[in-house]
Length: 92
Image (cartoon, rainbow, N blue to C red; front, side, top):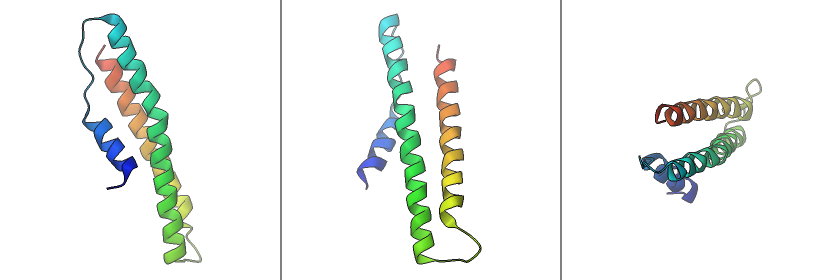
């Protein structure tokens, strides 16, 4: 499995701890927020890479796969951000 995908699987499987210490809880919240742009970048990059691969291996005069795949990647990344921020807010 690709190292980036392993990293995403590990991050997805981790749960935030429910410590009573406010400094520790605040640190965990910031750590989760710092990972969000990294995940967005990885998702968009992987979908653009897939789009380029599709354009090279299955050329089509009407459809540019890279544009479609990047848009799908952006929407999935935004959905992931909204879901994670809501999850962080609900745990407060």
